[in-house]
Amino acid sequence: DDDDDDFGDGDNDDGVAEEYHANADDGDDDTVIIDDAFYAYEYKDDQQEQEQQNYEYIYSGIATLKNVYDEKGVPYYSCEKLGGLNVSQAMELADLSKYGGKGYLLAVDRHDIYASFCGKANWAQDQLVTCYSSASNYNNDEHDGPDQNNANIPSYVQCTDRKNSGVAKLNDLKTYVTASANNDPSDSPYELGPPEDESYYPFNQIQGLWQVDATSVQIGLLHASTLLEDNRISKVNEEMVKMAYEGQFNTINIFAIDNVALNGNAMFSVLRNQCGQSVLKDNSDEPTCGRDLIMPKMETNRTLPIFWNIVLVVVYGSLVIMVTVMLFQAFRLRNKGPQDHRLVCHGHII
Image (tube, rainbow, N blue to C red):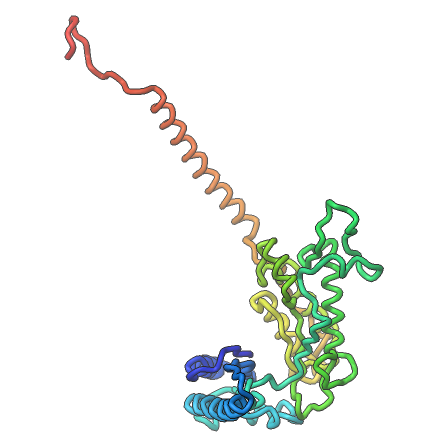
């Protein structure tokens, strides 16, 4: 898990460590990794002063983090410590029983000024796939995008258009994540693919989510969109689960998705049961894994069932009718004007 906070007095990390430690105590054999990635620091114009601050910041920052994790009984290591380890060796490092706890929890970073991520992020800026973008990028033979010569068609494409441009968007994202896992190994941050130096990059991250840039934000605001809604409508998590289940990824250590409440458990199940990790056995006493298991049932929506939608329509419809009738009656009485309720008896007003 990632904890993207600015470096301060350690209070944020104290809460993170305590929360994950509690989760580890309640868990089973799952190994949880805390990645304190991407702190910010104040930049100095003077180069010598900047270098001195960098030196002080690195070591004071690491010391503060180490104190926080020591207090909470969480092992804290640099990335190099994980290089070349297998799962059982990593679990041994993360074993909280050595610190009087239960479960497996491990905090890691590169121990540099940014507390950098220990893996290759596969974030190639010139190849990012956003949910919203200009139609000019898709108006070619490779994509079935809108014809910009038609004034009635918007000049942008969106991932939420499931029947038209969204199909091309999703295909582009699938190509992006496939390249991140299956390309030839390379340590270049500008190239997609697993790392070549696995001691420096112990992890390979697959970013199965819609990225964000200035254009996508502008267009998204016009649609009043949110990351969660874009994720849900485009069904991107469902597609990522299917790809993982079908074994389309060769190298995965960390799989990043948005809106994990929607099909996050399905992704966890599929990755957990990849061949080589599953401990289930069938009648032949051979490990049951991968596509031998049924793909998890996935949610496609988080809307209410149709029965409750009908109930809501009836209830709110009745309220609307009642309010309308009351307003109508009040309007009628108002139009009749003031009423003279005095009685006249034998020509005298009573």
